[in-house]
Structures are given as C-alpha cells and as structure tokens.
Length: 227
Image (cartoon, rainbow, N blue to C red; front, side):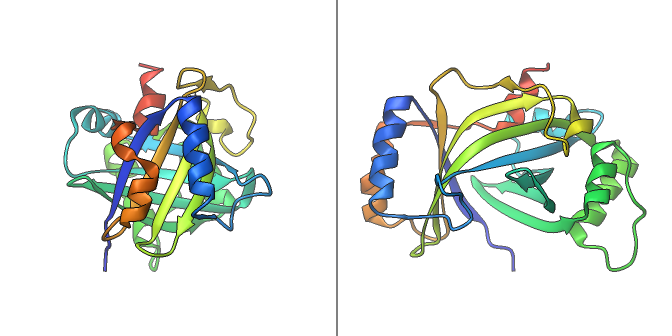
C-alpha cells in the first residue's frame, strides 16, 4: 500500500544551519549510510518531456505531479536507483527500483532498453514516457546531505548544501562535468519528513516557526538556471 509522507523545506543561512545542526545532533541519530563526517554526496539525473511538463507543473504548483530521476551516492555506481517521486496535497510518495550501470548509461544518453515481462513498474512507465512523450534526461543535480533519523514517527531531517546544476547529462556516471551553484553562498536547505505525526519535542527543538518555509525544488531550481 502506498504511504505518503509529510515533507517540509526551509531555507537557512549559515548561522541558522549551525545552530539547528547542533540541536539535532543532540537528539537524533545520524543516518547509518552517512560517512565518517556524517554526510554523503547525492547525484541525481532528472527527466522531463519535450514540453518540459514537469518543470512547468512545478512552477505552477500543479497537484498532483510527479517526476523521474536516477540517483547514486558518493560516486558509487554499483548501486543505482530509478525513482518516481509523486507529490499530492502537500505530501510525497517515492517509488523506486534498481538499475544496472548499463541501463543507467543508456538512459543518460537518451536511449532506452526494450520493455520486457516482469520489469518493475517504475522502469516500465519511464520507458513508455520516453517512447511516447519524448521524456529525456534534462539536468544533473548534485549536493551534499547531512541526514538524521528518529524512529518515532519515522522522522528524517536532512541538511542539504552545495547544490549544483549541470546540463552535461551524458556525463552523469563519470562525475566529471561542469557544475553551477544554485543557492547564494552560505545558504542551504533543511528538509523535515515524517509519517503520521511530527513528535512535539522535535518540532519544539527545531523552532520551525522561526525558519523561512520554502517550496524549493532542486529540480526546478537547477533547470531554471538554463532557461
């Protein structure tokens, strides 16, 4: 059964980030997938069709809307995921499946393998979109994430910084491409995600009412540079 999650985003300056990060470290556990410094690098390749429907739906705040991306972490291309992220009534749902490196190389070049029986639904739908609607890779989004988890409420808090954009989509798996910063110096994004309820003591700790709530979309912001 699909389970949507709450997802709130806040734009922070370096001072707010330092204070909030210190508070969170005192209460929540680092994500076990993070490195020794508590962070990891995320590289995502986002897709859109010939009419840039995902871009303009994001701009208009269309509800519901969805987008596809390929993602891997810390330069490790032995584990690559295809994800479909759906937003509905302010909540999000993520469906995913694994890709081989060969499949990811084909997709980043705008080519796609044949649809076969037993193929995961997310992969099949992306290939249909590429075939029927001209869905193609559009932008590489790269950033550094510092993630924390809290079991009660399945809470996840992340600090995302050094967000960059690149239109050299064919070089997605090489990690060698030109990157342009998206946010002003010192700015970063705080993301707060949870299932049913955000525990009151965490909400109080974060003092979310004092932060600048944002509809920031990494995909939209990174594409906007090229428009």
